[in-house]
Length: 354
Ligand SMILES: Nc1nc2c(ncn2[C@@H]2O[C@H](COP(=O)(O)OP(=O)(O)OP(=O)(O)O)[C@@H](O)[C@H]2O)c(=O)[nH]1
Ligand SMILES: [Mg+2]
Ligand SMILES: [Zn+2]
Image (cartoon, rainbow, N blue to C red; front, side, top):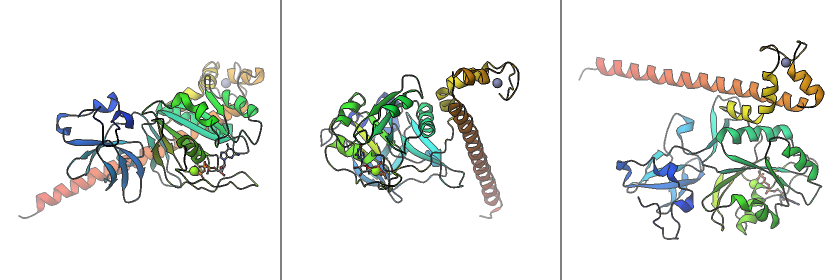
C-alpha cells in the first residue's frame, strides 16, 4: 500500500491522519485491503472516508463494545466486497461508562491528537467537570486544551485563571467562538492530518467553533436557554470533518454525564500534587481526620492544596473504581457465558448422530 498515493480529490492517507502507528499494523495478507477512517457511526451504518473509498458500510458485529468501530477509528475494508475487515489498534481512545444503569462501556472517540475541553464564561464553567475531562485526556495520553467560549459576553479572565491552576502547563484559551480569533488561538493544534475533538456541555459552542473554523455552516447551532445558560442538545451525533487547513475536527453532542472508567492513571496524573501530599502522611492508612503527622491536614491549613480539589480527587477515584469493577464483573460474566455456550455447543455436536 502506497501511503502517499493521492486519491481523486488529491488527499493521501497521511492527510486523513494515517501514520507509522497504523502502517506497522499491516500484514502481508492486507495487501488488497483499503484503509478508511470512520467519520460517523449511525445505528444501521458506518460512514467512512479515505483516499480510495468514501461512503456507507454495514457495521460489523461484536459482543465487546470496545472492539466495535467508533468515530475516528481506522478500518481495513475488503476492496471487493467493502466488508469491514478489522479495526486497527487505536493510538488513543476516550471512553466512559454508558449512561443509565447499564454496566457498559461507551467509546466516545478514537485516534484524537488534541482534546478541546469546551466550556463558557458563564454558569457552565465548573472546575470539577473540567477535572473529569482532564483525567480522560491524561488517561488517553492526548493533549488537552481548555477553550472558554463567550468571552465577548463576560470577563473571561477569572475563568482562565482558575482553569490554569488545574494542571501545570495546561493551555487555556478564551475566545468568542463565532469570531476569527478562535482560528488564531487554536492555530498551533491545526497541523495537517491532526485530529481535534471538542467535548463539553450542550450550548457551549462546539458546533459554533467548527463552523467558524470551517468557514461555513457544517453543523447546526441553536441559542441556549436564557435563564440558566443551558443548551438544547442541538447536535445529536458525533462526526468528524476535514477543515480547510487540513486538520480534522470532531463535533460531539453536549454531554450530560461523563462517568469515568478505566481511567485510574489519568486521575492519578491529574491529582499528582494531592497524591504526593497524601503519601507523606505518617500513617499509610491515614484517614486525614485526626491522626498525628497528617500531611493532608497540614497542606490544607497552609493552603498548599485546596479542599475542593481534594474532595474531587477522592470522589473521582471512588467513582472510577466502582465503574471499572462493575464493568470487570460484566466482562467476566460475558466471558464465562461465552465459554459455557461453547462447551454446550461442543457437547451437542458430540452427541449428535450424523
Ligand atoms: N456570544 C457568543 N455566543 C456564542 C459563542 N459560542 C457559541 N455561541 C452561541 O451559543 C449557542 C449554542 O452554540 P452551539 O454551537 O450550538 O453549542 P454546542 O456546544 O454545539 O451545543 P450542542 O450541540 O447542544 O452540544 C448558539 O446560539 C451560538 O451562536 C460565543 O463565543 N459568543
Ligand atoms: Mg453542537
Ligand atoms: Zn493524612
